Length: 392
Image (tube, rainbow, N blue to C red; front, side, top):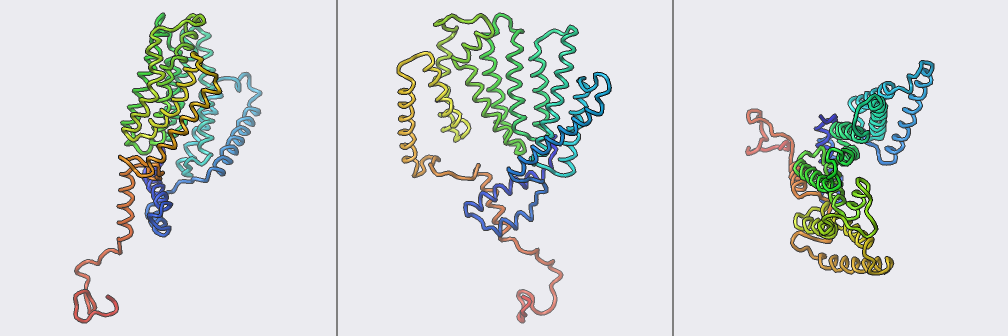
């Protein structure tokens, strides 16, 4: 499914690990160069500044090309405003993207990024046009539900085809919006069911991403989706979000009026960030740990929105001082590594990756030219002879 050369992707991952090892001083620049020559990568990958420039330049070129073609065809009645024309432009952009990647081997160069988003935008625009016509002719159902359902499939395809992290996130968010705008199927109970449904879907997608982490080609995509699963899953049970969602779906609540199962959503709001942190510490999972730390602030703001114990300035100052004190204590405690935790920052992502890289370095360092076949030894000066010459 993925368009890129898988051998080059593996070599790229290997080279990235070797560069980290070289920065840490585990290997020399000469060793790094030798292994890079043996495991080449044929992708065109400019630095971030050139990538940004190429993205903007490609966007300008495609805009001018589309505008010029539209100007030429503007004499044809209603052509350039029809959904079919936008679909045609989207298909042309996608074909250009495939050619750029397959024949010129662009890999996140800015050109492929621009063409991908241009093609996706044009295809979605064409779908919106077709959907408007169909709904006008009697198709029932919410407009947003069809739109986000289509975006879910399209962004998912681009994420699988080009291993694009942002497209993977767009696909997941489209799934959540699709569930939200399809709430009519739940009728009167939509406001009560949606929070639990979104929590379950977010949890299911999160565990799927964890189980699929063995697919290294999509590692960045899966990591990004994991983060959003944790954030959306928490938000779906956050008291403030649930209350506002219920007011949007059904009749707005009166001031001071609570929501059904309020105790559950308050417990979710306060406890889940600490559950993330505890699981992150237990599993040594940075994603869980950092998500929990971020969501502690969300829990504090939610609580402060309904219970005014002290002025916001005093509350923020108190929480900030407490976090600084805790951080200082943890940093001081972990200067000496304890139970697998340390304050020191390592470039190596996983121990198994480090082991594989070190094995490769050892193998490449101590490997020599292939030994000659046994039958090819002849003449004086071979190993074990009494008259070894300078050829030994």
